[in-house]
Amino acid sequence: MSAQPQNKPHSRPVKRARRITAPQITARKGNEPVVCLTAYDAPTAEIIDDHVDLILVGDSLGMVVHGLPSTVGVTLEMMILHGKAVMRGSKTAMVVVDLPFGSYEASKEQAFGSASRVMMETGCQAVKIESGIYAADTIEYLVTRGIPVMSHVGLRPQSMHVLGGFKARGRTAAIADEIVANAIAAARAGSFAVVVEGVSEELADLVTEAVDIPTIGIGASAKCDGQILVTPDMLGQFARVPKFVKKYGNQLEATREAVLQYAAEVKARSFPGEANLYHFKTDAS
Ligand code: KIV
Image (cartoon, rainbow, N blue to C red; front, side, top):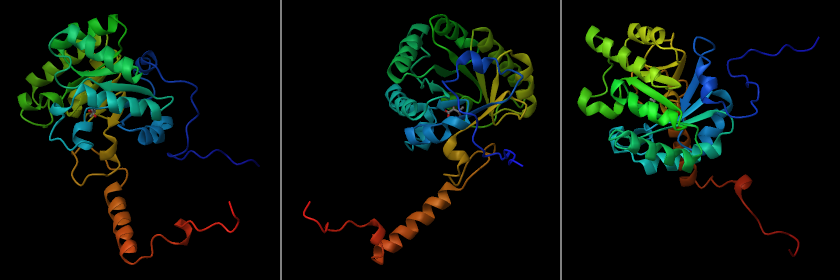
């Protein structure tokens, strides 16, 4: 009898021939959940490429890669540099790059300039903007000019100084109404999907029912049309992470242990060992 394929959660998915597109993500509304993760470099993008539908080059890179206190200091140049690396490392996941703070809010023309530069220089397929009713004109302007837009409502980290920090949003009726209205406006303006971050589960479910595009939850609800996490957070690279993060690995401990062992072996002169050494060749070459 031939062996049955195992249905392990970590089994490799069917190979895809080409990159997933924005319309394919939109078509997942109410269907199979959309699996998304962030990446900022080529090796990580290569590892996750086959296993996710969408890779976000998030401006969270300011905090998790560059050690900034928030995403406010991230520049367009940083996003382009990391966007290029992720495009080089991935082949079939859809790649979306965040427009950073200050690169799109002044006018729709400014947004088009930044978004077109990101797409032309990185080769990514879409941009993400933190958005709402106030950004509907910008989203429509970008989409009608060939730039797919992913929106981001709820906790908007670029507005942390207005919101008063990184606290969960939408836990009172007034703010909940505002967030639902923001998501509806972003969807009507032509976004292909909307990230819903840091809101009550009840509100996330209301948003998912209210819009006809996929909701991608982070600190939201399992009933969203997809989920995203910041990859270093879910790999356990940091001791402290937000409540909504589940750690699927313990990279912090694994790295510490490896470095500790390396340091001990260097001090004991047991590294490099025979397997890591070159020797004179015996012939004349
Ligand atoms: O910047 C980012 O990584 C994000 C995700 C948290 C959605 O916007």
